[in-house]
Length: 348
Image 1: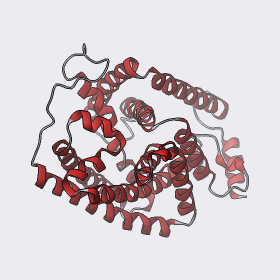
Image 2 (image 1 turned 180 degrees about the vertical axis):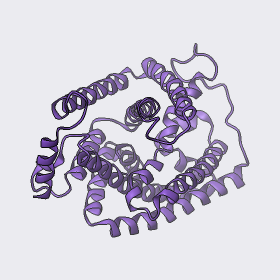
Image 3 (image 1 turned 30 degrees about the horizontal axis):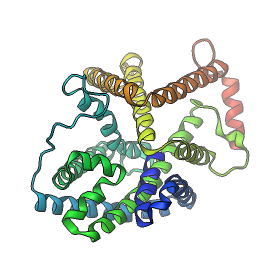
Image 4 (image 1 turned 180 degrees about the horizontal axis):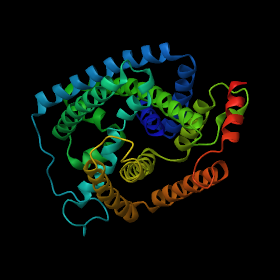
């Protein structure tokens, strides 16, 4: 949520003079607050908002990409540009490291899994929805990448940074291209934050009900405490870090989580879940390769990201371990008395 909110701020500020450039995080926080308000209005409002904005952003971005390709042709990203502090790295190493950030571009399909309970016939439609969403995203991302590469060279893309798409649209559509791109980006980020806040808070609430994280019912009469916690954390990250660092920290957390989940599936759930063991093994190997390259690149260029990510991971592991020790017996099961008490509290 913080990454998308920050992107919203970066694009929105393109509508204002340069003197307002420092207000990106403020706008990001404002968007997260709006996402909270939409989420507390109920599923119907969320669903209608998500559908309406999804159509606009998919069609709009597709038109920009197709028009860009039609004007510039299928350009290739070429040149001898070498990022700072990476001159001695093996060929292709930087590409592998960059995959860590590109993985975040496809993280949106987790929004579908977290909303599985709201999907009609989820056993059939859940997997189908994930595949369709990944295919649509892949087509649009590749088309956009080629369109941007056709309009800008690598130094220009790096200079444009958070609003490269708007910069690439200017040579094709003129000044109107920038305005249209900014508008589409604003719509896309608004809908993305609303959907992400909804799915993340739902997942947190589910884990709380399953006693996998501390109970959120202790917050008293607060309406939807999982949503409040999710929004508060997103606001904190938006204030503290810029877009690049938020994306980097998010990529590290996501890859570590992915490795942990696949390892847990492979080691502990082989008899309970029907799956091909080779799939999580391949996923772990690929995740480790990408994560290792990314960590090394960040060690060279921005070690603060590694420090913050390490502190966050340690805090999560320690807190979860202490919670499980205090809430389970020697075999890892929750005592019945505690479960009954918790259930009683939930009913009241």
